[in-house]
Length: 314
Image (cartoon, rainbow, N blue to C red; front, side, top):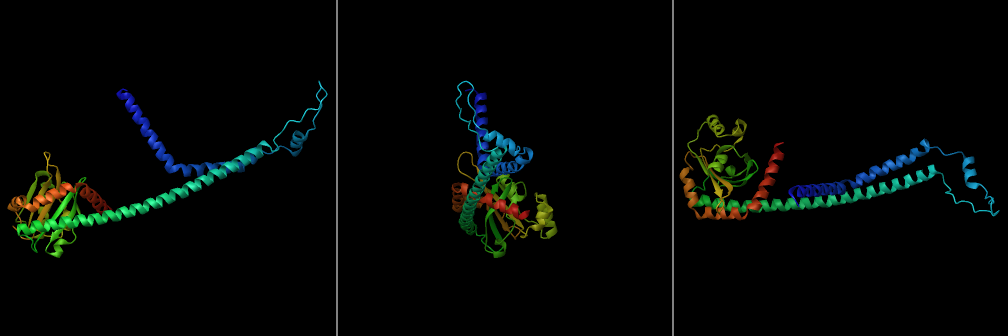
């Protein structure tokens, strides 16, 4: 079969799948609609086509049998339908309309039952995913704490976060800090082309140190790195130094997997050397391998968190 024939076959198959999906979803509505039309038609048939006079019906249906001119024998009377055409059509429309409405009702009820079951399954799946996300976060948090301890920066003025990319955004998967205020909250996602995170994703690493003490000057500096003025104002932690490094997977292509970010309230609490030291750590190798092995789970959790963040922003 040539390319044109295969394309035509695929188009027919797609049409068949769509038609079947449409039928399975809407057939109860179609049955209800047709049944309603049939019942309505039964109600107006008598108005549009009035019954013939009773005398004509009686003459047509009660005429006596007559002898045959050739044989003289009396022929049997022709069997006739006892009801008029109008009555016959009215009954037929009433019966078919009632059957169609009943079928539509049963189909709608079955569809509601199926939707209820699917809704229950969806809620169960969502709960399972939430539990899975919590477990994944716990694992990543433990690894981040290990990195901070190895770097000797598990302090009250420092925090570490890990982000995964979903579409055109980075979604935070985990965050740790010895300081509970720095560990809590914060923006859960960032556009992929903004800030130090976006820079590290493109170039493999990024480092900002000696950031301004003055809040207005600091926000202006954040805007220089791609954040909007509104987003810069919304940042809670006034960090004076930030470093970020990309987590690359094993293999010849070195797929980009995630971004790890260190932030400190000290002007040189973290710096370029922090990146070099991180990459030498056993904890970094373990984190890289773990993220590569959990990539499908991480992608799924990132999608759910991103969708939730978008929903909250609307």
